[in-house]
Length: 172
Figure (spheres, rainbow, N blue to C red):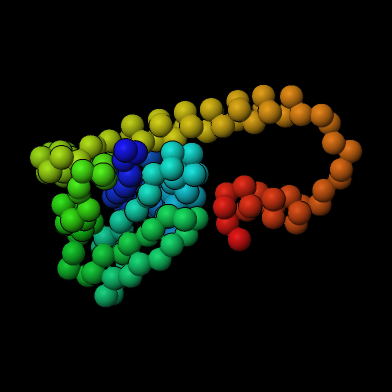
């Protein structure tokens, strides 16, 4: 039996822990969120894990909302709900014999709360290293594939290349 993996990410915690995103959020929080979503979209494609990024209401006020981008589920919590509370609740709700919950956060208290519920934990820094290693691995694989492939004489325009890339990612 193959286990399903759900990867819950404390979005603002990760943004604050990754040097590049931490700098970016100082002048463009939305761009920092989009960059994280794109990185975790690649991670989801590579690992096959279901990725859920949770942003708490400290920067985005309102009733809370859910959306999907790059096949990643994005949650903005309700105004009086923290990302930690949401993650803990879902870790309990989604946990079963067929599902492994993994939580990415550098919040020490949250790590122990999650670990106590049987979920695996990874720090934001470890996640960054994992994603960097994934990118290197993908680049190496692509280089090997390109070296083995016969050279094409097709001159594809950027629109066609973009569409091919979307298909590769399973997007429409």
